[in-house]
Image (cartoon, rainbow, N blue to C red; front, side):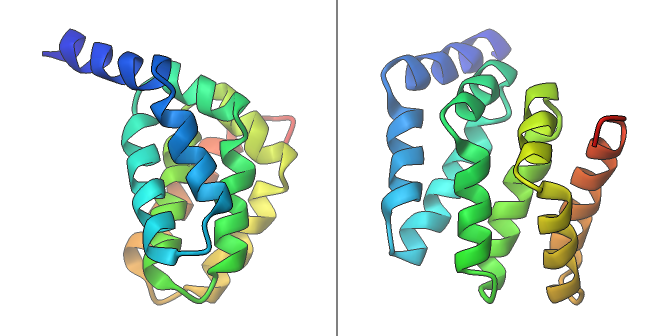
Length: 136
């Protein structure tokens, strides 16, 4: 089953689905559509190969843009920080997050959402994964 799931991820990426989803997240002003896109990208990012490709497409900047634009929206923030946490399992993800001032973005968001347990857990997991990179 793992091989079958992996091939589904690959087909989605090869056929341009991941890029289309990311482009939609970047361009939409509709919060519900953006949240759905972030959720879909989180699922795709569970594949390391897909994560590497998404990073090259600019996923980190798009997620941080969403976090800045919808910082008041708890559901949006939970989806965004979950995706950031998933991206930190990749070396390239940690590097891209660092290049986009991600540690500060996460710390600021944690301060603003200190009463959201799931959000804080994902943000803390992301920071823990980032912490192993001595360059950041």
